[in-house]
Image (cartoon, rainbow, N blue to C red; front, side):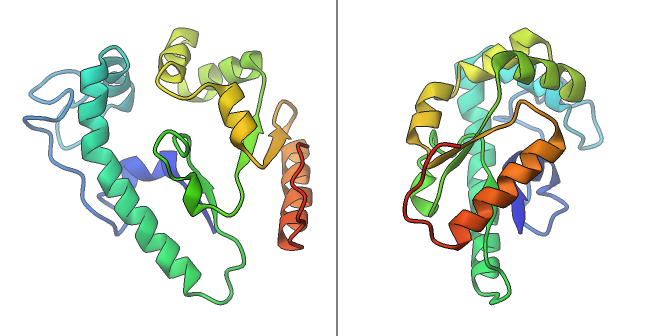
Length: 184
């Protein structure tokens, strides 16, 4: 199974896991402010603009969300580990190293793309500006450091088929318990 951390946050209330707190005191963007347009919905872009401008707001949001995500992650890991048909658990975790979770993983794979590719993709798929990407990156470890701390590096500058081919090759190596991780 593949568990994608970025996609789980907005689904926590509906995904069978812990519940997100209601918008209210202590929740960045609450009280009619940008980010909570009403009806329990969260405008992720508005909240992002708020928290990536203010480190205190970012910490408050992480203090609310990350325990819930960690709890759901642990529930899913236990479920998958108990299933003998599951051979691999893949986790897409942007803040893996920042939150000290790398010790939970047998192998760390860094999916690399050039700055130009990352910028183009976030503009096209998320509607972010280049500056919004930079604000988020400033709150993370450098890409160079993540790259160096990973067991493998895959190049994600080409199309989806190329990336899928690399993933299949690497997964085959990992499943064979190749003892010599190298950068690819």
